[in-house]
Length: 249
Ligand code: GLN
Image 1 (cartoon, rainbow, N blue to C red):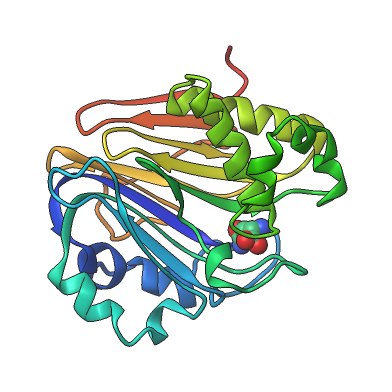
Image 2: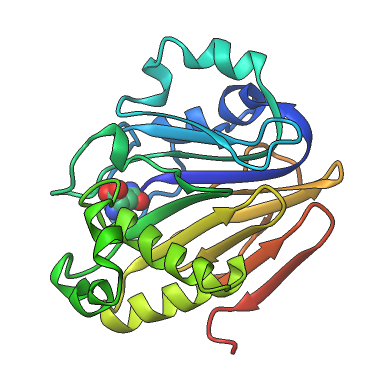
């Protein structure tokens, strides 16, 4: 089920994360090592969001095709460097549309968001939570998918003043209560902070070069990669990283 990554640190070419690293996102798309919950490869689209140097808001590039088949991406990724990146490749959940708008990252203002997983009982299990959203948010969902609705729920908490970690933690808890056994690996950044949850899928991180990389699967064989335990929230900046249980208050 989908793979995603986020990077905060000194500017690197996007190609490094997407193509050049030994187990870069492109490789994780066609040869993932740890797929859970259905799906074998990630061919149903991809997206990359990055902050240009000094920019307050990210640029996003998404397509509904496999990441390796995009004729423009390699050149774009070679010519573009950034110190804040979130990227994802998608394996659509059965019954969900394969469209560009359904590919992560979802974005609004400074935020980039991705979901790796699946909401159980979709869509009925989400009725009560969706009813609490402004109708405008429901009408402007990127796509009729669980991931797009999760983004609307996270964004509502961010608008209410929650920090990224709290927004993900509260959303994961609320969705797990409404739809038990959902797989909810969420990933969020505003270019300064990154937050990520592990619920139902793998996630690893490495701290190096004054920066942090968080990825569904390690990008290389650096022994510094650590696995985030299941049921945890990771919150990091370029210089600090914190792991807590999702159940902690
Ligand atoms: N359920 C989401 C979708 O279909 C994410 C799928 C995944 O993680 N493979 O877009």
